[in-house]
Length: 69
Image (tube, rainbow, N blue to C red; front, side):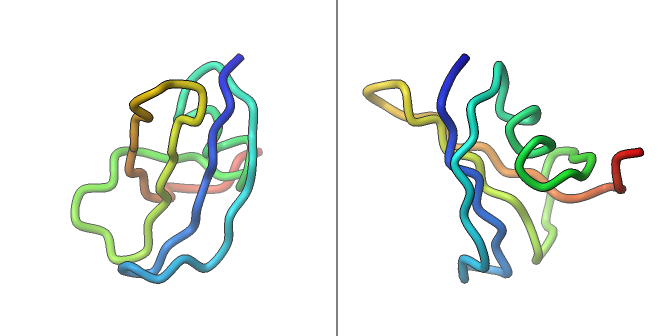
């Protein structure tokens, strides 16, 4: 498992931050927020996932598409 920082953003303003371990960035976002996600596109409210286990961390952007059941 890899370590990720999951941040909820409104534009460039960070609203909340979570530390999560998961196998993939989208799984980290789902696990931290309890919502289904998809690629960000141009959404103003979005989720940034930063991979913390690499020398050059990957940064991924997602948006909420629905609640998990």
